[in-house]
Length: 153
Image (cartoon, one colour):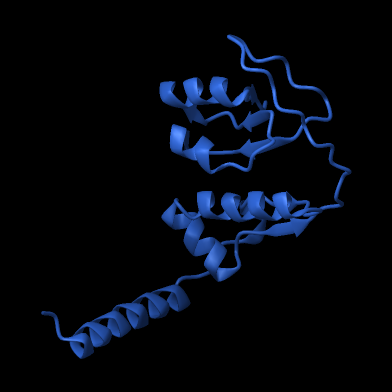
């Protein structure tokens, strides 16, 4: 059995070292990081934003920037949202309507697990230029009636 007091002391020491390292490093200029506009007009938007932050936090560098306040989020004017009707289960998903709900993924890998964590009611995923989609994610997207759309840089 591990001594709880010893474990607490070790955790405190590690945290103190990390905080000291963060304070010593010079902050990155705000202009070098992409600014993210966030529109939160509903509970679904809030959930999507929370998931986006968790997704970004998967990258240790971005997680440190977010925690230190160096990753800029800006509140955008909320556009009126239309609830997308569920797509019928067919071999090929129908093309997304212009007012359909979408979710943007700018970096990383889209996996089946990623799709399962997204809020229901989405009809398309907007993918950044470097985003990779796994074959299982493609199958799951078909099942969910999601379409992928690449964002041009």
